[in-house]
Structures are given as C-alpha cells and as structure tokens.
Length: 96
Length: 460
Image 1 (cartoon, chains in turn cyan, orange):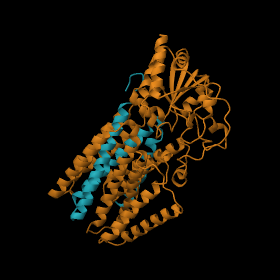
Image 2 (spheres, each protein chain N blue to C red; image 1 turned 180 degrees about the horizontal axis):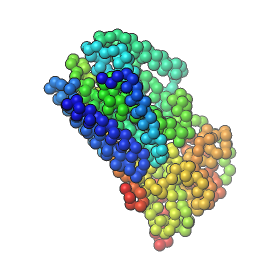
Image 3 (tube, rainbow over the protein chains, first blue to last red; image 1 turned 135 degrees about the horizontal axis):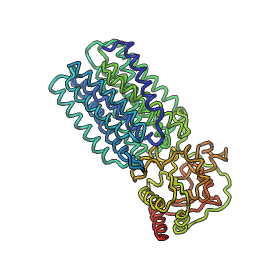
Image 4 (cartoon, chains in turn yellow, orange; image 1 turned 60 degrees about the vertical axis):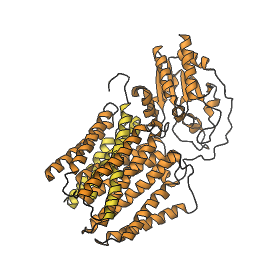
C-alpha cells in the first residue's frame, strides 16, 4: 500500500518532472507532443485490466470491459498517430 | 511475482519520462515515442501476472477488450489524414478519460470496504475522467464538422454551474456512503458528470478547440493519476501526473501562442466570426499572372513562404515543396514562416509540411522570422489570411487587433495565392491584399503552385 504522504510525494515529484520535461519544447512539436502525452496516459489500460481482473458482479464486468476497450483505444491510437507524425520530421542535413 | 511487476512498472515509468523528454526535440522525437511505446508494452504484459487479475472470464474479457479497442484504434489511426489529426487526438484522449472514469465506477461498485479518502479520490477521478470523455467527444464532433453550431443560450453559465454543483454534491454523498453505494445514485452521478462535459464544450468555438483538447488531455492525465492512487498502482500515478502537469503547461503554451488566455477560451465566446470591422480600405487588389510571379521568385535572393490551413485543404503542400526545391537549385534562399494558428492547432502546420517532405530546419515560427521579412524579396502567402492582416497591428477597432501576425507586408513584394476575393475566417477585410507591393494570384492552391513551377522551369 502506498501510504498517504508517500503518494503525495510521488504526485509532487511527478508534477515537477512533467513540467520540466516539456518546458523547452519548440512550437513545431506542440501537436506531436500533445499526441505523445496523450499516448502516455494510455497507461490507464493497466488500471482497467486490474479493475476488470477483479470484477465480481456482471455489472462490474460490463463497466470494466468497456473501460478496457476505451483504454486500449487510447494507448494504441495515441501511439499510432504520434509515431506517424514524428516519422515525417526530417532535417535537410539528412540526419534523423 | 510482486517484485517482477514492480520492476516492470518502474521501468515503464522511466521509459515514459525519458520518452517524453526526447519528444521535446525534433532530432530525438521519433526515438522518444518508440521508447514510450516499449514502456507501455512492458507494463501491459506484466499486468496479466497481477495477483488481482483472476478468473477465466475476466482474462478472456481483458484480451477481447484489448483486441477490440486496440484493433479499432490501430485501423483508424493508420488511416486518418494528417489534416484530421487534431480531432483524432481528441477522440483517443476522450477514450482514456472514459477508461479512467470506468475504473472509478468499478471501484465504487465493489462490495469491499474502501476508506472514505480513497472513495473520495475515486469520485473526483470519475468526475474529471467523465468530463474529459464527453468533452473530448464534442470537440471531436466539432472539428470533424458533425456539429457546426456553437450552442449558446441565456443563463448558460449558471445552468452549467448548477450541473457541476449537483455532480459534486452527489459525489460527496457517494464518498461517505461506505461500501454499499446505491447503484441508481452512481448512475445519476455519472450521467451528470458526462452532461457537464458536454455543456461546457458546446459553446466553445472551433478556433479555440485546440486549447480545449489540450486541456482535456491534461485532465485525463490527472484522472489517471488519481486512479493510480485508488488502485495502489505507482505506474498509473506517475505517468498520469506527469501528463497532467505536462499537459497543463502545453495548454498554457498553446493559449499563449494563440494569444488567447485560457479563461477567455472557456468562458467567453470568440472563436466564431465576430461582426467584422467596417474600416475603409484604400487601394485596389492587383492581379498577377503565374508566369510573372514565377520570374519574380526565380530571380529573388530570398523568398519566404507563409502557408495557411487553406494550403493544406487544397493539398498544395507537395507542390509547394517542389517549388521550394526548384528555387533552392537556383540559389534562392527559401524559408517557411509558420503562424501559431496556421494549422488547426499549434504545430499542426509543421506536421502537414513534414508530410510533404519539407525539412524542419527551414521552417521558422513567428518570433524567429518576423524580423526577416524586411530583407525578403518575395513573400508568398498561400491559404492564409487573418494571420498576415496588418490591421492587427494598426487598428484598435478591429476584432483581431492585438493578435500577433506575420509581417509579410514588409517584404519587397508580396504574392497572395487565393481562391477568391472574400474576407477571412474572422470576416475582417485584409488590408495586405490592397497594399501597393501586393499582387494577387487567383486560383486553387495546388494549380497555382503547379503554374509557378512550370513558369520557373521555362526560365531554365
């Protein structure tokens, strides 16, 4: 169990990390980066798997099942479109 | 088993953060998304071993759900046109929000005891996730052209506030109702949260949608982070909160690039056309033939191209790149000037140009290029209008006054490629089109670019 204050520390450090990582991004990457961060919260898939995994009633299973479908869509869709966009960025010097 | 899972989640969290960091530079961006992708694969695979995942039917449903959701997203993601990218991001983001809300609902439906703090966090996560879900769907529908009107009515803000208030109140009741949460109450609560997302997004105009999508992206991240707390899962907490913070910053950057404070986007209604000013325009529009324009460019030292969304709609970016290469062979310096709102989202135009093969190091944003127009022989404006309208600098009466613009009018010659003579998106007459150094090249973007290419080729 992650204790209350440990959770708070994790939240704070993660928030600073997220802020720091993005702070110097050029405008040209705003769209792919938004898409990329959209992919990263696709990690919700793991959460939905656990939720569905210990579902007991039929109703819980239905909600969990829908949640897994949505989360998988988030993760896979987010990856595919981000990768497609970033794949196209090339420098005129030929370096990738 | 628990050790392996923890190691895997830790690795995933590191890969996400390093991946995001690499995505912040065009040189390493591609590697970044691939690393983050591996993080996701590791975390997902190892979750099948999670001690709380049990029961044959549960496993079956998980695999089926991943197959359905992942398959559909793979198919649509591979096929979507680059011009439609913003709404697809909104759609996938909404799905994540919905999933986060789903986790909360499942937890609240459970028969086992949760502490009221966890129950409360689950409730907050459901509200945020559900708002991000329904709001993103509306954003998708608007950008896709399924909803064309912005719904506005009297007392709108008060009604929205009322719906939000009712949602929060029900949420508080649920937080304190112990292990046995009333199913009907939970349903009403979820529906209210969804309704709030819809009501909040409906009045926002299409032009402001990018900021809204970015905001919902940050909200989904936050909801996911909170679900991590409910499920006692550090991978969810870290990834969710990192995205929540990064998304918040990105939203601010976008709003700043578009010169639109976030509070304005959410609570005032610009975004659509706003009247248009009636100021006098002096001078006339002067037409030019493609052959003359071609000569002008071929013998220039420096050409700056200002593309707008109109260029992408006409699918002219490939022709423009061909034109650029032709000019570069003749020793002409060619640069692209991108206004933050040139696409449908800051950075969107860069993606569209990248698709055509334009290298990113000849593409400049507003701050970098604006001082260079003075030294340019020719500025070509294609499919852009309001972003080069000098009244934004000069006329305080104008609805677009104060918006940062590209100073294309300062170039020695300006060629505007335009379909017809109409006013721009905001309904404001563009004084640039009437300026002495401006020539109009009428026609479809792609055809006009082709005509320019052949005229330059004729010069040899």
